[in-house]
Image (cartoon, rainbow, N blue to C red; front, side):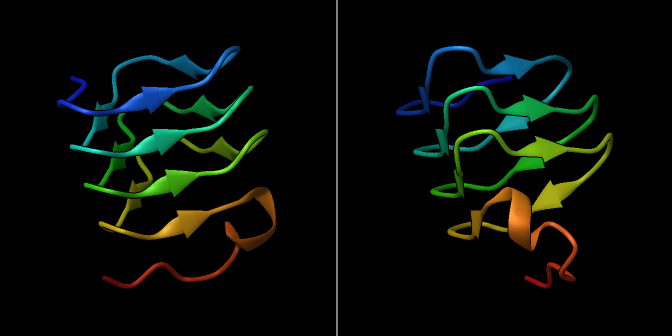
Length: 72
């Protein structure tokens, strides 16, 4: 499910995910099955999110900070 005002760059792969309003999905991003991306969140180019990961609203995620605990 993709909400309004979402920008998805070239090469991004999204299957079985929810992307909140105004979120930005960078180039060549891969979102695992069941991922939830909160409103206004930004997933930077080349990031790979594992199945079932939830990203809080307005958070910015890159490959380098995925190992950090993501508290809302």
